[in-house]
Amino acid sequence: MEPPNIERLDEQTVQRIAAGEVVERPASVVKELIENSLDAGATRVAVSVEAGGTEGIRVRDDGVGIPEDQLEAAVAEHATSKIGDIEDLDHGVGTLGFRGEALYTVGAVSRLTVRSRPPGADAGAEITVEGGEVGDVRPAGCPEGTTIEVDDLFYNTPARKKFLKRTATEFDRINTVVTGYALANPGVAVSLEHDGRETFATEGNGDLRSAVLAVYGREVAEAMVDVGWEPDGSGPDAADPPVRGVTGLVSHPETTRSTREYLATYVNGRYVTASALREAVLDAYGGQLAPDRYPFAVLFVEVPPGDVDVNVHPRKLEVRFDEEPAVREAVEDAVEEALLDHGLIRSTAPRG
Ligand code: ADP
Ligand code: MG
Image 1: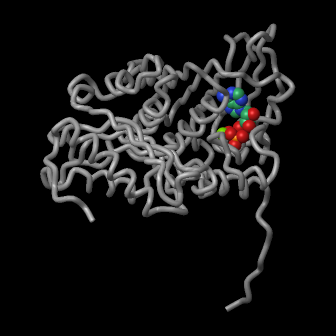
Image 2: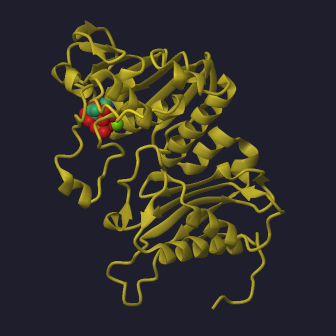
């Protein structure tokens, strides 16, 4: 066998491989774009997709916008307005994004248009990126805020395109993502449209139950009870408790589905899939659930920002807690208390 000939990959190949790490499928693009809109302080975020997002994805917001002279930076590699250096990460980031790679990578594997008009600006402008080729900044008529369009995702990476599922499946994933953000941000009017048909639209009035009604319907909204838990202010941790609060809604034990998908947990406003949190919720129901049935839950857990590591892989939703047992216990107590208060579960023997 010949010894290997090691060569550096060309720029374009590196770019496309890297893009695959962040952008796996249309739903991952939607996630990045919604996070940008929320980071921009939007009060309305309208998502519309074509053919499960494979042909087109458009996210429009009314946020702070991107000034014309910043459009090039917005689509450049490792360019962000959100953190300055690694120290900022150690203090816990307050924004959903911070890597400065989403627009860059999406632009590498699609036809991307970023169009924006900051509130108060006389006119808007846009920039397009096609398969990593950045075009010129041009004037564009547009409302205040930002519109991002992503057409023909993966048109230049056929291997990745082939790996996509049926459009219905891709749309389901998009729906899950948009629903997750809509519930996490009841103060933001979030809407989703597929091939011109509205899937849901929340009012953005700040009321979580109203957002649940919009996305899951009346039957579910009426079966939800409020969760509200605070640390009791005693003990050695009283000054800086490991869990600052657990709030949200959980469903009656008979209003369930056959998948865990409707068990949504958020840590410091960020959607996460920590199995510890899901298990804590299920434990709280204490055997009142039918086998293989899962309740609806929308639960917000607040912990000190420095106690949770969000600096994991961009596509992964797992988090690591410094104080996992305390978080688990707080969530279980919070849900159990809510269910007991509403007479939805029977009191069990006092727990030791
Ligand atoms: P990140 O979100 O990690 O900073 P992105 O590639 O997603 O990286 O975005 C790059 C930059 O473009 C952001 O830091 C922000 O300044 C700007 N930007 C992107 N989307 C929007 C938006 N919808 N509204 C305002 N600014 C935006
Ligand atoms: Mg971003």
